[in-house]
Length: 307
Image 1 (tube, one colour):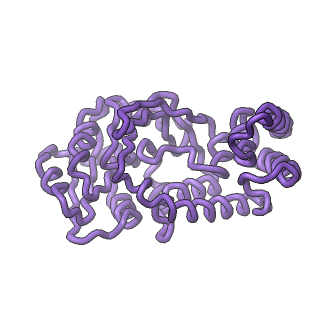
Image 2 (cartoon, rainbow, N blue to C red):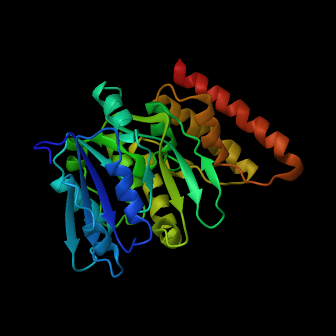
Image 3 (spheres, one colour):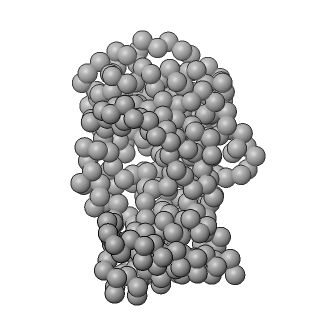
């Protein structure tokens, strides 16, 4: 093992006997070799521990818990023990492309950002369908889009280790712990980016935690969104959500103009995406008019952010 690895790859694991071997191997196959792979088996009751122990690579650091402590605790434990200059994440059911670490390390070393994720491919295990993600790449767009959803793919993230050690995951934000973390980091002034290169295959399957906890996570996401918007100095009553035309025409433009004054250089496409959150889907014959409404206000808001 390297005395001082440049990258610490963190992988919390729980009952992932079906997928974890492939996830581990995808890191061991990286073209960038100066890393440690830190795996925390969080009290799994299946063969996860046995499969982890079958790997004897000197770059792997193994932690086995006898009882499940939860994802937030597992992530924070891994961050505390990480020795690398950079921390990268990979979930125990996803697969990293071979040049993932090399590309992100070069990008961060060039001081183009403090935290970066990237494009990814989704693989739906039930349908066999593969899709390429659609990302926004600039710091301004990512900061703006945090007001409506999580614009970073968490298992594809790499960033400066000192940032993650300074901002631990918050207990109580389970299933939205990454979203609330990006908000804290954004408000602290650190720079974000998404690489245009695909970095991982993100697996979608029935036992995925994000799908099982979807209902409870939605409430946490809503509260996180509201907190972020208030922290930007914007009235929470303007928070993006579907609303009737008469209410929307009063609130949506105000929100869009406000966030463009606070975050400069938001792209038109990001503004367009934000405004869409105020509109209902499936407008039938009115679709043309709702798109025109969205286009006009997004264009005006984009101009306010540039001048």
